[in-house]
Image (cartoon, rainbow, N blue to C red; front, side):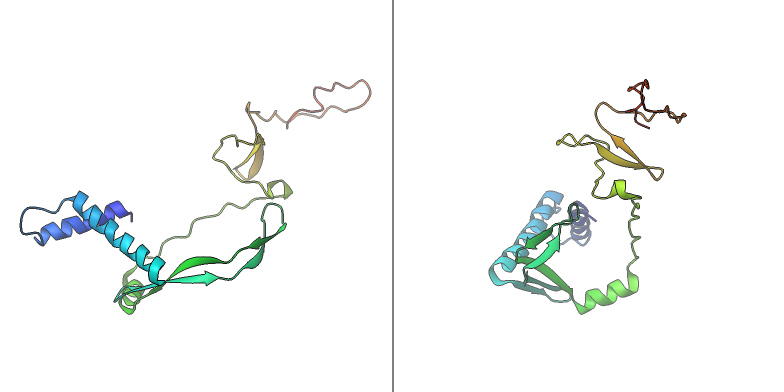
Length: 175
């Protein structure tokens, strides 16, 4: 659900229950009220570090300790500084309703990278990265290196021997 859908639902409910004496509550006005609510939560977290919303839950600012981590691309050790993070502890009413009525969402399926060629490579939606390095795509569990201009893999054929008198054109062909 998005903020736009929340605004639409609140506006519809307010108008159905005739909460406004003169006329209808517009989605634009509802959007402002929802935004003010979010801003009030953020401002309270910044100034006080905690906000408790009864029957909903508690937002709290906690500080994560500095730690050592590894860069997944290079494997090099990296120092991660201490940082503030927002935590949320759901209230009793929310916990009960979610436990009873919520539909479980299906986890996203991850594609497995195969072989050493896939280590440290990221997929880029088929676009050329700005650094000029080739993009690696996974198609039908095979890795295909792409670069501009697009190189189509050559049909599989008997490789010619490379040696004295052999053509250098076929030695560097992409297969």
